[in-house]
Amino acid sequence: METLFVLDFITFDLLFAWGYKIGIVIAALGPLIFIHELGHFLIAKMLGIGVEKFSLGFGPKIIGKRVGETEYLISLFLLGGYVKLVGEDPSEECEDKERSFSEAPIWKRFSIVSAGPLFNIFTAILIFAIVFMVGFPTMSTRVGEVKEGSPAMIVGIKKGDKIVRVNGKRVNEWETLAGIIRNNPGKEMRFEIEKESGEIFQTIIAPIPEKSRNIFGEEIDVGLIGIIAEGEIIKERYNPVIAFLKGFEVTWRLIKFTVLGVVKMIEGKVSSDNIAGPLGIAKIAVDVANIGLLSFIQFVSTVSIILGIMNLLPIPILDGGHIIFFLIEAIFRRPVSIKRRDFAFKIGLFLLIALMLFATYIDIIRLLK
Image 1 (cartoon, rainbow, N blue to C red):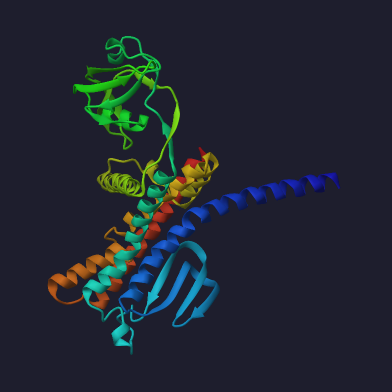
Image 2: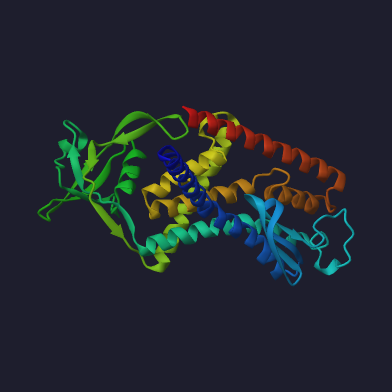
């Protein structure tokens, strides 16, 4: 009996652990998939295109309910979702020409298809804006340590000093300060420092160039002045307008970073070890959730941006592939033939499955290390 009890306890513990992890993944990806498909759905309805199905997940239906013309579903494989529009398949006969997707003008089709990725990107902006309004915990620019013989020590910066401006621009966060210093190796900049006594003094510092590697593994020059953060945590709050602008700024920076990463991966400059599949994303989601709610929210925002950008890639079957077909149709004044489109979709599906399997393989290798 004791052995059975111990085995039951271990089984329950494992089930609870896996249930927690699955719940975290669903909490991270479920809303993003819903928002993506909601974008397609709302714009289609707004533009007078009929919607037959709205599904979270692919494959066999788990539950569903029809409301009006639309059947709302939750399907078995929750790694995506879809919206099935009236007349979406041009090879099928559609009696309702006025509400048919295939019969709609190009601008309407373009708007509906691009709405999903754009909803994901706008969601990221909104989440970041809310975080900035509520309060964003971050390290202050107070210095905790000054390295011997460093440029900072030479000009008189000491432990406890606070750097408040660089080249006249106010800096409140250590991350912002570090970015300015790293991005300006060898360039003279004017620093305004506040002593613990409240006294303010200004000085000129040229960060020392030092070789380093960026997140893509490329060798670059970065600037250093020889200071380490004290670790003082502050919470910056902004009014709604400034918060939205800062949310847009962070989102735009992540968009550029994501696009650059994809380009470098295609060029072969980024190792395949940087690819994360479903297992990798799930592990990151759980790790970030264990750090705290704010970190998890920021992670969800970043994944939302990545989801939007990846869906805009010009691969047939993705939203970006459909957009390419629309552009070809607009240029040549006639749609791509059904036969060529079907062939392109098969290639796109093959590429996506191959990428998914490869990413999953990388995830497994990484987890086994």
